[in-house]
Image (cartoon, rainbow, N blue to C red; front, side, top):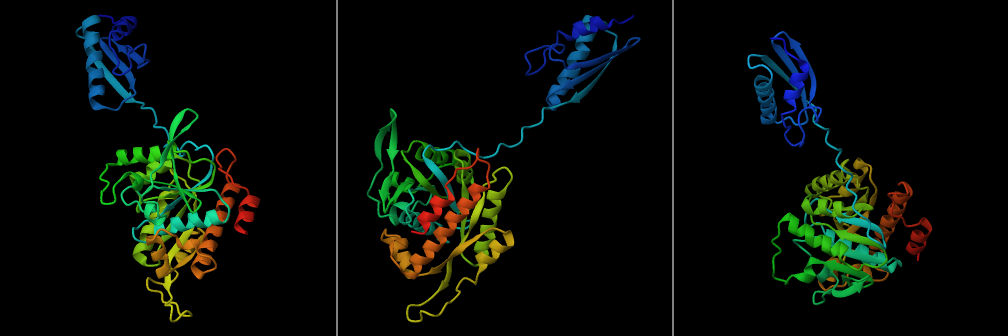
Length: 378
């Protein structure tokens, strides 16, 4: 029997393509049909590599030709998969928050290095320099901003903005603060899975009346995980600051923190590294420095990674005490620790300015060099 190509094509119109809602001809799955006597060779191109889809297509073609054209035809089906290429991972840049010029994430690879203490003091130092500052305590499982700012008994108020109910951050020492600590009891553990924690963070970010801010500091949890990705997907981070102590164990984790921000799919500029607990000077020997955790470890790491070293903070009892009583050490005037914190904060501002000057205007969240430096030099 002489086989007719048109009859074969018509038979193939009876076959539905899985997931397409069309038959094989309409979906342009059939690329070629060759006839050699009683032999039929059909070339198909499918969009899915799934084995059961390929096998079903082969069986359906053979069955359609045997039922509608010639039951003794020798049918060969060649299948090629042309799956659509996956889109490149989207750049993790969230939607801007109206009124907030710069968002700086403060992170540490390891817990216990004083990241939250550094964040609190950076916030106070920025406020003293004349900037409008907010602090988002994103350390969901270990919030501490409420203690460090002496606002444990406070609660964010509800305000109406443009017809929408918003949370009004609690304010102290010139810093606007939101933390999960406002919504939990002091002895209550936060036992949440990642999606629930991310939802709580989004509410504190987007359902808050932050107003006009020059800087929003985000105190991230230790490590590199769900919360970090949720934050970076939620809002466009201007830059990140890494906090580490000098010892090798902390530096190894700090290096991972830098690597996280520098991943191609994340690409958040690292403004620099701060070395906390750099050395100890006893009150009775003010000229002596004891490098309890090692010497210049974070500075050497910054040099190796070719990122700025923002400064060092000594291991001073008053810093711990100030945080415990809710009066960050940066509130002090003309003390060695306050001066060290001011120098570090000035460096953070300068690196933020440099970063913004070197980024295309469509992506930058800018402060001007003049505004930044004049405020710093006050």
